[in-house]
Length: 471
Image (cartoon, one colour):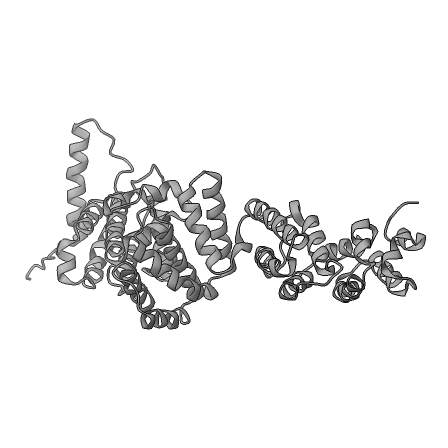
């Protein structure tokens, strides 16, 4: 009878096991530990059997230059998955930095640094990219559109694993072969092979044009049409970029002119949080005596009537100065002509919400009511629309204070004139819907029912009692 022979075919796992045995033997000769060093051979075999298909997604030219991917595959084959993940992350960071440089480096630095002016000052050239940590690199790349939302979350997971399961930091976590291959596929699909989206491409061209030549009116109109199509978060990001260009110490006049042309067209699409952030950046620059940055930031904010977005401390000082100017104009010579400008400034500082800092809020109410009541001869027609707008934005607390101003002899004197009494009636119409407490509404009812002239209100015992004046 013929004997049967079994032919053994060597598998990748067998070769990997033999190699591991040799390495362990060498380590033992050196007296080094050999336990818990290598990923089990079956996991390595899974990686080897699947990595080829993923690598085929890379164009041959890119694959030939992917040195970190080579190191990753080599480390994984040996059984050092933690080192392999570290090399994979290095490849991703290298690819992402290349995309940043190919897009707009200064724009990226503005977004990546955010409010950290110290960091931004140190970011100038491609050589400074390593100063941007990996988390900032990912977030800024997402904001300017170099990676997608889904891509960001996948890559951020790889970053987390790199920090907790790679050789980058001491750890006791294990990686699976298929998991490592999947991470490689994520990096290829979400960064290396991902084309720039349309919005990002348009943004890149716009930024290049801003720094190349003075924009013609047609180019500004085209940009404005593009702004109308921007997702809200990308409009905020572009605004951050333009803000950075304008406040840069190295800016040239042409760039500043172009930003001033674009800024008012982009502003309507910028969200509230981003607008407030510009005010915060101005406030920080002011507090740290960065006068050039603060002055440039203030110019952009004022260009779009955005002074209400300045910080509370800055607005309190500005509002105090503005109220001084308005009160001075109101009580000065030729007041009807001089009031409108200061009135508009106070209105701009108060903003659409009437958000006045607490430090100056009472004075704000007093000055606006004073100006609205007139000076006995009349009211500035050109300024009264500003006063009406500010009164309309009074809060319930503001309205309660304004209602009680008849108790002050200065205001009571104004109510002794025909003009003052007429304006008082108009003021009550504006204030009444704002009063919410029973006490305030009872006082309003008593004031309206008072049979005498308004200047006599302060002498009525019952009304004084309703107003909170103790006998």
